[in-house]
Image 1 (cartoon, helix red, strand yellow):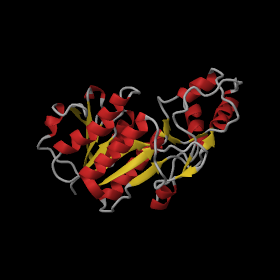
Image 2 (image 1 turned 60 degrees about the vertical axis):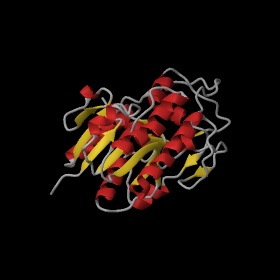
Image 3 (image 1 turned 180 degrees about the vertical axis):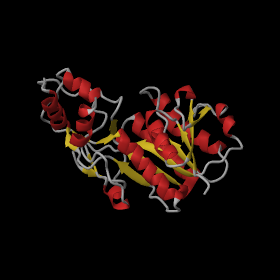
Image 4 (image 1 turned 45 degrees about the horizontal axis):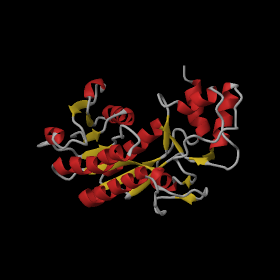
Length: 282
């Protein structure tokens, strides 16, 4: 049986985690990034920049069954976001041959809701910031170029190995006010990679994916609750007098019912399971 081939464009931490899983499963995996020297065995490296169409000429003549767009902006400014999520989508899909299935890693940052309400894949998206607007424009470009061959996975805040900022803040005693409540929607990196693998395998089996999925765990939780649970595990006290310095995530509760209905089963269904595993790791 011929192995399925996949190009992971923007093969950083999440892309590597996905690529290694697929490689073990027998897929032919190619990872594209500006500096691919650090890619592990099992992922064929290609040096190119999604924002530089000239560099992508290296892909001419190559065909892949599947493509994962997993690029991340190098900074938090409009130019960086557009370079990856808008120009990068157009540049890459403009050079690839054939009709591969395409998965784009997006973000729940496209939602504007601030009242703690529930949102799903069909909820309104009217982001006020440049980041959400660029993400939506990239999704639109993806639909224009790939049609029903494409699907977007809107991920919540990723945590996991190497993504320990919240744990570090809690160790330092940084809390947040109990009121107003601000919900956080999170996803362990291994589940983010697991969802992408799950969707790719469904696509490879000939199933048509939904246009969008929300990649979050099963329990949206108030940030105050998450921080105080971590503090209890770490045996530290928190200063709750300071407001959150970064509220870019808004205040909504994201539903993962579409993924659950499709059959995905979470390794870390809530923050307690995910952070508990990180705290228990040697």
